[in-house]
Image 1 (cartoon, rainbow, N blue to C red):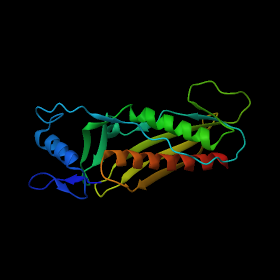
Image 2: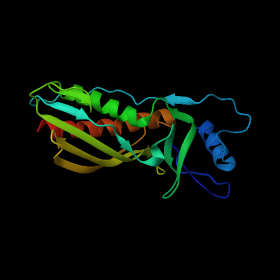
Image 3: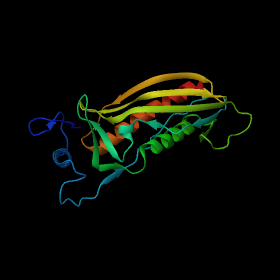
Image 4: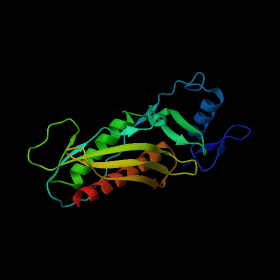
Length: 208
């Protein structure tokens, strides 16, 4: 995938990318507008993909997934790319079909429910079955974006708490995933793969 730095024309391709995206990014960067003047192209919207997961055996648990907290630069409709060490770009024509925080929470719940079939997995605040040990998962995401050198990156921190709010374990995560093709669809799939990896890591912690 191609991400962009600025040269005398304000853009330098660090990897191959589609001509249409290059034109869009050049227009947005040079004009600083929501889209190129006169453009009537409808934005493309994306959902994170669902993928197959392996089941893990563990004792029954009630798992609450708290809303995923995201960094401010990710809190927008546009898919984010890191242009260089200090600049990020929010796409204007390639958007999340649903808020990325909500998507991340939903994907995490769905994958945990698949990998831990004996668990009751719910959003925090929903009723739980009585008598089950409770685990509360909290995730803070600081990076969920394309990288200027290519690939997708998810970074942040997670916490695992018991039903009384006591922290059982916490750790930082940094997960990279290469792209298999050019363009935003490949980036979205790679971002989805990073999140699946995190969900599987959390499932392994819960299964212990």
